[in-house]
Length: 134
Image 1 (tube, rainbow, N blue to C red):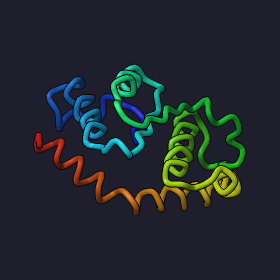
Image 2 (image 1 turned 90 degrees about the vertical axis):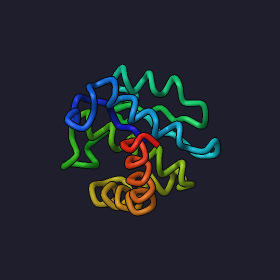
Image 3 (image 1 turned 60 degrees about the vertical axis):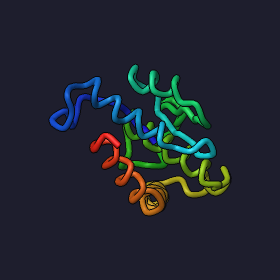
């Protein structure tokens, strides 16, 4: 899942292009049967999405029309995060009815926790491989 590419963490890279390339490389490490979820709200993310050669779900802050269910998660960046979380849940096999029934701050946090527990180890390993140039 890629939420955005902004000029943060540049202290670890040789500039913005190198940082974007490292993020893109994570998707090249995915298998053909895996799903890439990419929020395409910025040009670098749209470029990465255009080069994904396997299952891809593009999301946007505009995919979330009503944020009143998450009073502590307002603003376009949080709408985009919710759109990403819902897309990942669908990719994991959670049906839309269950996703919609779970709307709200606590449910969103629970969904984020579930995704984190399922994938954080793999993402950390993949990130280390990218940083090591493997």
